[in-house]
Length: 99
Image 1 (tube, one colour):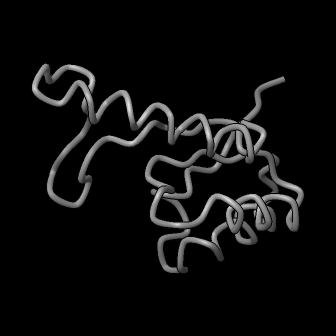
Image 2 (image 1 turned 60 degrees about the horizontal axis):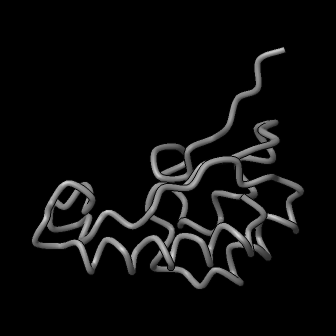
Image 3 (image 1 turned 45 degrees about the vertical axis):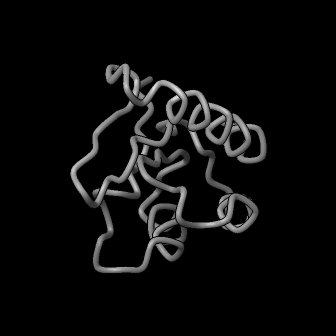
């Protein structure tokens, strides 16, 4: 059976980010993905996920300054240190969110 997850960064964009958990659950999604969740505390994201019974299935590591056009750090040798730090942050979020 195919499993689908809602992308909180591209779906339900008429609602604020944290409200999208409820919208995804109401639409019948059992899982979700997040591309740029790092401006919200991981504890708050985990709380919303649990409250609405929706699993965080996919989460992307920080891509730098997304609003300024960054779309990743791994391929830029001048940003190796920043990339390594971003992976540590992603791991913290993933562990708490059960991703």
